[in-house]
Image 1 (cartoon, helix red, strand yellow):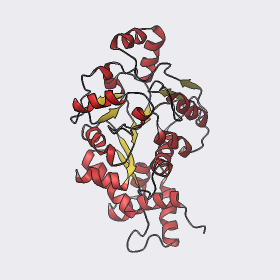
Image 2 (cartoon, helix red, strand yellow):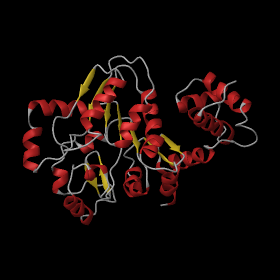
Image 3 (cartoon, rainbow, N blue to C red):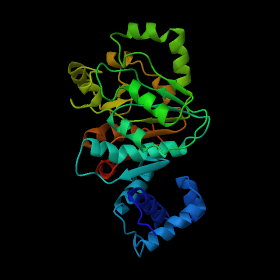
Image 4 (cartoon, helix red, strand yellow):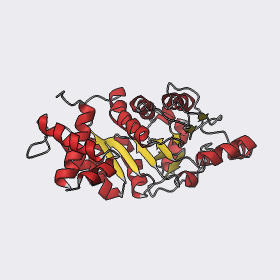
Length: 315
């Protein structure tokens, strides 16, 4: 038998934990992970033959599986996916959590469904992790407008998602992420095209997105979506981070601040009604906004790294 790769290790770890530690049946495990009972059985056998499963779950991901169970229980999540924290940051970090998030989303998506997507380095990595499937009648919708300068512009990311999924429809939000005044925002949003766009965006079946933190290195600041002065004003007003194009306070409320009134993203409350919201983010700077979002139950699935997961459980 061939040696399982890291992706197979992760799945074997989760199956083994649920089977031996949580004492679920193979059928129950299959339902939870979205795989067949036969595959559950095969994975358990592969784990035994490869020496990964003995008296204990002997894989590099065993601690992550325990963290997944802890996050799901603590925050009432339908699913948590935790990956080992890489020693190197940058693209290694984005790939570590982004690719599994993309794989999860693509395996959950069904023919005829629609997905709303965020942007940023982690979301770009998620595109590379999406499983290749023969989808039919998929639509992809951007939840964010564009930014002045970016190698990971929302326009590009949405188009890349659409190509990877062979989408029949690709909906871009043809506006900046934030406009100059609330009046400009209202004028643009009132146009027939934008009214139609927002209606369709709120009707997606799934969302895959990330969050923004309040550091000067945050993507939406570094790439010009908002200025450093605006970031300082938002921080003084109590913002802990950005989600769905709005800056939230520690209680998870959208701040009554001009920047939020200038966001071109779809209605915040409407997006929260989407039935399957997958959040992928990590890093110590993002713990405050992640904790706020998870506490409020804004998402159904969270993909992060082990260090962030532990911090969320210790907070």
